[in-house]
Each structure stands twice: as structure tokens, then as C-alpha cells.
Image 1 (tube, one colour):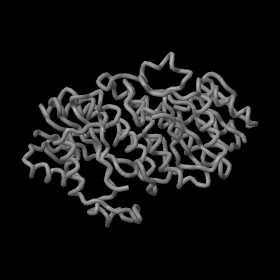
Image 2 (cartoon, rainbow over the protein chains, first blue to last red):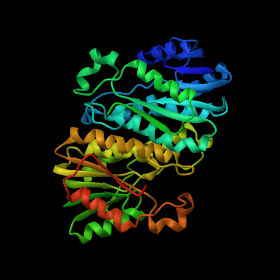
Image 3 (cartoon, rainbow over the protein chains, first blue to last red):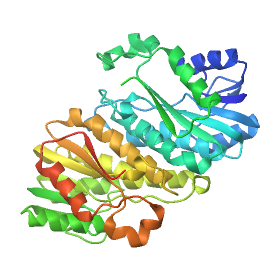
Image 4 (spheres, chains in turn blue, brown):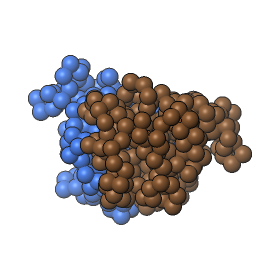
Length: 200
Length: 200
């Protein structure tokens, strides 16, 4: 398949690139400053340019989503809005603008996270953004058929424990390989409207 | 209790006003054009003015949230953003700015809806917004204690079937009295971090 991979240079994106390429897929990498195509998907106009440059696709896999981490009391309207633009609007516009770019049966796989369902310190903006995307996925699935849409919602990555483990005391981490395998399931399988929860 | 009721002039807000007043609470009604206090909560600056005018509070009950309804393909970045401002940013800022206004043990009760968990025609923006608020509620609860926060997430109201029933084929509606009772439970009880789902 011909797969557009957003956020390909990140921790998750790199793992997805490796796994999807190893399965014989043609992976077009997208990033702000690195990748086959250089676009900032927080700007809807750049998503249009991205799809124009990418050509026909069988799947879109998103591994990108920036949100601010702060206590609620320190958040500002600008912080909430940055989380919305960075992880929600970006991924919703990837779907909307990608509807006519995707082959029948093609899929969108979006990234969310465990913050949508479990409290994590300073992660209320992340929770808001992931909850928004997960609800969108189940709502959009019947409407955009025969195209498919799913979300992958992992807990902290095993490989990121050194950096972020303190925010997830007692949580069982998930290896990147298992997260990548879940993207494969979403992309090559037939499921739609699913939120694949990895960890609780 | 002294309760700030946002969206008091609407279908749900009117029912809440009746129920909460009948239980002996002092209800301060808020609306864009009607109510004891006139403020547009989609503007964070007006939320600040609202709390300044309201004085000390025991509870904040929100029954306000406007979102556009359209097929995904017809949505625009402006539509997604309007849904975010109309139902998400407004309610998150009610919480953040209200933290210092609320008595200990006081509560925020926010409004979401069944679109967060079940597909409803043209309701992907509503789903996004409700999912965002529901995830925020579970995330924020431990952080803002001893203040409490819950969401009420109803299906279509029995009293709104004439207007909206066609969007909910086969769904069992919920009477406004039951929704109002759930707000009472959130406000007078001790639960926090809960999404009270009414209908499925």
C-alpha cells in the first residue's frame, strides 16, 4: 500500500516507518522539518498542499500531536487552543481533506493516548485533545465508509520511560513494537470506528 | 446552595432552573441575552466578568454548548473551531477561571451528549466537543479536589423528539426531569470525575 505517515521523525513515527516498510508498504514520510514531504499539519492550508503533493493514497497514518502540559490553574485560553490545533484540528482536517484522496477501503489511523481515559498529572489538555479525537473517530466511521478510520490510544511507551515514566507511576508501559502492530491491524485489516486502547 | 446556571434560557436550562429552585437553591441564571447575568461564555474575557459579577458560589452548572451539524465533507476548519469554542473552550474556561470562586467541595457540572459515544448523523463536531469535555472531566477531577467536577451526557430529550427525533432513530429518549435529577446528584452529592451517561 501507499501510506502517508505524519510525524515520521518522532519516536512513534520512526517505529511505524520501520514496521510498515518491513511489511512491503511504500511509506511517504511527512514532517515539519524532515521527511519526504515537509508540511505543518496544524495549518489546514498546508494539509491541502500536502495532499496535492502526495498523490493517491491507500492509508494515512498519523503519529503527530503536540499539546501543552500544565496544571489546570496555569492553563490559558491560548494553551487549550494550542492543544486543539496541535492534536485535534490537525487530525480532523487530515481526515476531511483526505476523503477524496484515499482509495475505497483505505484507512485513516489517528493517534490519541491514555490521558483520554485515565488521569495523568498536568495532562488535562492532552486528555481533552485525545478525547475529542476518539469521539470523532466513532462518529465519523459510518459516514465516511467505505473508507475506514480508527484511533490508537497507547499508554506510555516502554522506550520513553526514562523521559516520562514519572508521570505514569505504576502504569504498565507498552512497547513501540506493539503500538506499531496495532497500526498494521488498523491499516491492513477491515475494522473501522475503533479506538484501540493499549494500556489502562 | 448558590448555583451559577449557564444557558438558563434553553430547553435544558429551564428545566434545571425549575428543579434546582424547587430544591431551595439560589440560582443565578446566565445567558447571552437573557438571565440575571448577561455574558457570552465563548469569550474567555466575558467569563472573567461573569465570575466577578457573580460573587462566591457553591456550584456551577453548565447547560450551554453550540456546535455546527454537517456531514464531515462539508465541515470547514472554521466549523471545527466553532465547535471547540462553543462547547469545549467555554466549559474548560468556566472551570479554570472558577477554581478560586467555588467553595471547598463545590462542584462544576458540565454538559456533553451521547454523540461522544454513538454515531449520530451530521454530529461529528458535536462528538468531538463532547468527547473533549468528557475526557477533560476525568482528567481534571483529582487535580482540582476538593472541588468536584462531573459531566452529564444525555441522549435526545423526550421533550425534543419533535424537533430532533429523526436524528435518533430507535434511540430511547430521556425525559428532562431525569437529566435535571442527574445534575442534582452531581451538585448535592460527593461524586467527582464522573461522566453520567443517560442513554446509549
